[in-house]
Amino acid sequence: MKSLFAILILVGLLSCNQAEKKSVSQKDSTNKDAVNNNAVVLKDSKLAAIYSSYIALKDELVKSDSTSVSEKALALSQNLAGFEGCESTVATAKMLSVAHSLKAQRKDFTAISSDLVALFKHADVAKGTIYVQHCPMANKGDGGDWLSSNKDIQNPYYGDEMLNCGSVTEEIKSK
Image 1 (cartoon, rainbow, N blue to C red):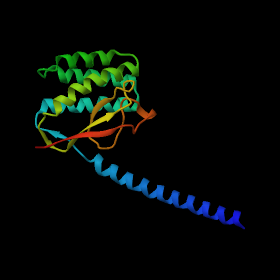
Image 2: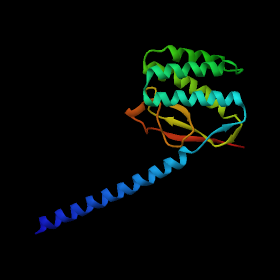
Image 3: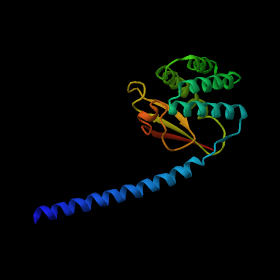
Image 4: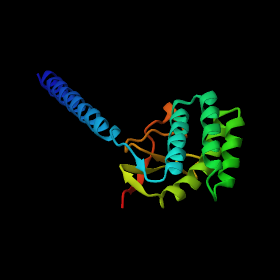
């Protein structure tokens, strides 16, 4: 009798846990829809082009598509080329565009992200929010930052291996 009672309690608890997970899952998808509507508009058109090409590069790293990463890095280097003070970032983006492995591309992405986080902290955001995100495990535990238009973490350093590893460390909003 005690065994039967213990099994019923266990089944009841497991059922409650499953129901709770379902409601959390539904809540998360609603939050993603709201966050994904965050359109970032920058007042400077050159910065807007740089930001757009950077986000495209980051998204391809999230997908772990090395060929597309190379294409997006080349586009980023072209957008950065006309912006004063970004000469070393242009060179890094070009190196990233010819790198043959995701590991090398992600290493170069760290340097590009560091430069562009600093650049966009001083950008004139007209609308939306730019999120500075951080993965503490990237680069052999040294960590790595990146920019995102979405609050949800989509880790470019690990792709689907650890897609949600990281956190928002700063928000850059309109002034």
